[in-house]
Length: 322
Image (cartoon, rainbow, N blue to C red; front, side, top):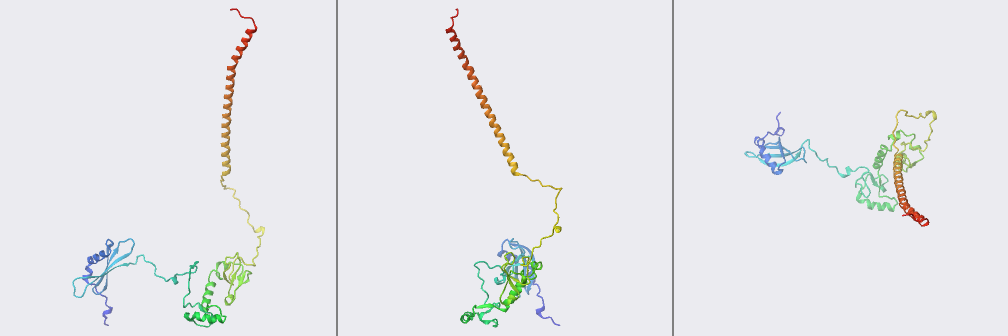
């Protein structure tokens, strides 16, 4: 069986393979100072070879500079075709682009955000169709709505059977369905709970709304076979005395408790005692000084009084002999 020329692998052109320095110079013109070691070459086509060099830029770890050389038929010199920076298997790459409508997750919509539905959203159908229309033209929706409004049919679009089935599957298999951990441990189901508010329409055969403020699903749609510990028919049964465990007393270990208030009070009292003793000592010194001063004054005044008494005695008595 003959092999076609398309099945043959291109052979490496020796002139292109040997022109490593030519490829390096071309890379240096594009990225001066960022060309590292030579990593090898790849044969692209006949007389076309791509040489690869490591990139030394720290922002492009794992990337390689690729320089493609081409030699024309019967030419002796090679020509630089292109120089590009390509990622290797170990390169750090940005994640693949995902359109915003695919990135949007439940709970991302915040106050002031607007999320219009797609024009061909299969979850919606015209309100006047009564679930019988396979689809409708969005450009004619407004004119149809005016006709439906005059007939008393109300909303422009309503939930389609596809949208209703999607909601049913999402709610039933979620955290408020029968397989939730809290439902598996519940003493009763929402179908027998007095806080369960029935829903109208076909969804009411499977779901209800919880109205127990103490339940974790208060104000949310729950399946009728869901449940929690806040069921209306749960009665609190006190445990018997014999079933209550005896208290545990630790008679070996102890805890050291520092009474900060008592320690602070003792410090204040000690400071007060020191201050009172200092005041008493100062008062005693003052009293002693006053007593000494009074005694000195008495000693100074007594000789003067004796002199007066002697002079009085001399005047009353006879004069002494001289």
